[in-house]
Length: 260
Image 1 (cartoon, rainbow, N blue to C red):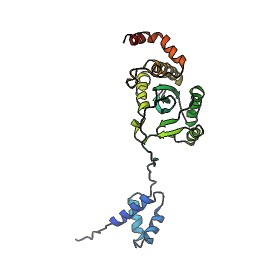
Image 2 (spheres, rainbow, N blue to C red; image 1 turned 90 degrees about the vertical axis):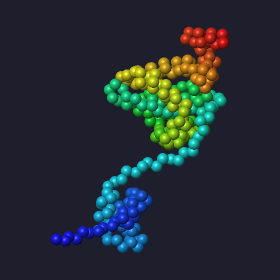
Image 3 (cartoon, rainbow, N blue to C red; image 1 turned 180 degrees about the vertical axis):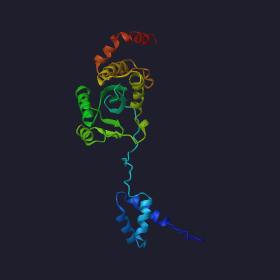
Image 4 (cartoon, rainbow, N blue to C red; image 1 turned 90 degrees about the horizontal axis):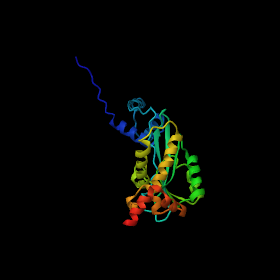
């Protein structure tokens, strides 16, 4: 017995629907079909609908979020304090499974950690509160270097920077090395604190972070700074340098410097 085998070549229809779905991803079948007919393509409606369903275009498609185009910003070394601050977030879990976020702020000039703040959530308004506290203590920077996180591209943060005449230097998406100072700092903090301890609440984390930040600023040597700590390389106030000299932890270090 002989049976007829249909020969369907829907390549043209598939290509056309793919083109329309790419140009108009939020439209439906009727819009696509009428556009096809307006172009003079006399294809049967049932045929186009059959291909449309086979391609599963009737389902809601997930669209990639369009990232803002950023210009590459050179990672320059600041020569004076408060010229450029680097900022970034870190994440970890408490013992009860709750997520905790850590907001780090670094001065690029002497690599000083000027803020390490922990919280269960850290929206843009919390970022502004931290920066306002720093503004009262040490002033504001000329530039801020950060990534394209939702807290940093929010209107709240952008408007605050405009109000305080601060230029934002965004890194390019997927290029964390463009914010290398804070990324290196994050590695030390994760190895010494986040990966080394378990935390029952954010208060335990904050207490350890404060102690670690003080030790980092006064005692952590940086090769780029001639193996000096941030406070030793360029103290922010005269009292800080006096504290460094009087510190018992640094007497041996200072005696070795005098010998050398």
